[in-house]
Amino acid sequence: GICVYTPVAFAAYGMILCMNGDCRGGYEMGQAALLLLDKSKTDSMVGRVHLIVYGHINCWTKPVFLTTLPLINGYQKGMATGDVGSAMMCLVKCVQVLFYSGHSLTYLKNELEQFCSQMKEYKQNLALGYASLFWQMVLNMMGGSENPVVLTGTVMTENEIMEESKHQSILARISILHFNQMTLYYHFGDIRAAAKVMMKTKFVSNFYIYGHLSVVHEFFGGLVSISLAQEKKCKRCLRIATKKMKIIEAWSDDGNVNCRHMVALLKAEIFQFKGDTDEAERNYRYAITTTHKCGFIHDRALANERMG
Image (tube, rainbow, N blue to C red):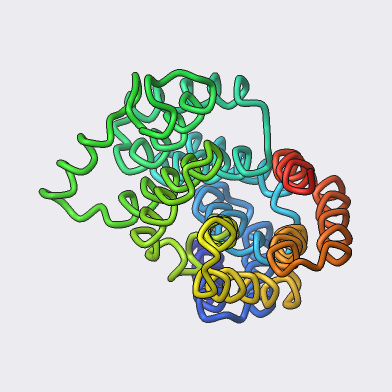
């Protein structure tokens, strides 16, 4: 029969379907979970269900910026009912969406400072570990670190995390650390260093459970690979970039509206490498148009920069 945990079970099954590539089926299970949650007339499972549905399922089929308010709702209801763990992880997912949607760094800095303070207060070390990675990332991009490509500053140090990994299994956190490093290296123009770090980030792309972060990982992996191909005239790097573009294109064809601009930008870079400037410009312009429609302001800026 149906009980208070039934919505969580439906949501978890939906996430499993997404992890196995059936994002449409996963979305349907997620919607069923939300319907059962509404009928249950209780808030005790809102944090868990919203974390799974809006943090791990809907990002594969719906605009990712639409998940922020439900995640905040999951946080509020989770805190109100004592489900602190789910509440804090809702905040982590919300921060990731805000960051990759191009929200103001000043806004993110202030929000992360408040969120991390609360995570410390409630001893939510798992959520704090993930949130700290993005807090320091924001500070680096704002000039708050001596070296902008080294995630070491007032919030955390890379050495602390690497030392911590020797005593406990934090593979996911280490992988996201390396992914953030790769992103910083790319933005600050050290393509070879970005390529070297990219090899350490495979864990992020192996699981649909990371949601939109997995898509962004493949996107930046493609950008790093095609940039290295241009720098070294390397056909192997071109093949890697093309492979990553096709992975993202398959997600786009399957209904993921959050990665259409990524496909176009990677295609533009590949055409540019091959010397087809007309196709390159057409794809650059399409990438710029789609980022504007979907709200990915920072990716729009990147597309404009790459088009020149």
